Length: 160
Image (cartoon, rainbow, N blue to C red; front, side, top):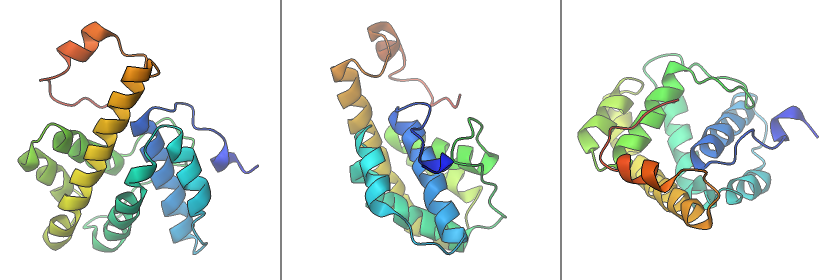
């Protein structure tokens, strides 16, 4: 099995999104066909398979409409580039309903016309992310404590 298909170090929904995005981008950039069935199978492990269509469209828009050269890490890399962080912050802001902050994060990476196309996609992915995290919390898989869950509700999103 190729290294990028090893199980990601963490099955948390946000980690799976980052990993799947990197796999998708690496295949597109190398002009290889994207192995959608395998991506969907891996995303399903963290209940993020419903986000895949929007994620694929978002990535396609990012690759075409970026205002900067996008920095990208290898699929298994535990670090995130500033561009990956901007997209994650846009998702987290959309999760909390902060459309202005979400848009500002996208503007740091994308052209204005591309941001308008990407905003609904970001909202759909954020909704899938919210449902996946809640489902994993309910199953006791997430590892987040009840205390942390309550204290994090009205806090700004964090990137670790």
